[in-house]
Every structure is written in structure tokens, then in C-alpha cells.
Length: 72
Image (cartoon, rainbow, N blue to C red; front, side, top):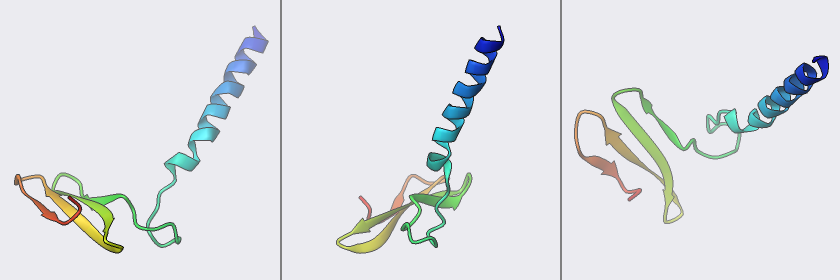
């Protein structure tokens, strides 16, 4: 019984440790580039992209049906 518990704990730790790099945040200041999404929760969602070699955004508004920006 102890072996099964130890194996389950080890497997859980390995799964958690393998997910840590994917859960790391990118504020755009570490040299990794722009964050993929930003904005205000429940109000806007901003998608960051590159268009024609330059930086751009697409802004999705929660209270309207229009999208602004040129990431389309």
C-alpha cells in the first residue's frame, strides 16, 4: 500500500513540475516579447499581434459587438 501511495505522490509531483514552465507569466519586460492577451476583466480583451513587422492590437469590447485594431 505504501508503494502505491509513494508512486501516486511522485507521479503527481512530476505532473505539477512539468506544468510550471507553461504557467509562467510574460509581462513583456523579460525579453520574451509581448503578452498574448491583456485588458480589463469583464470590459475589454486586447489581443497583441505583429502585422507587417510592426506591433499591433485587436481590442474586443464586452459591451459592444465591434473590434478595433488591425490583427484581423
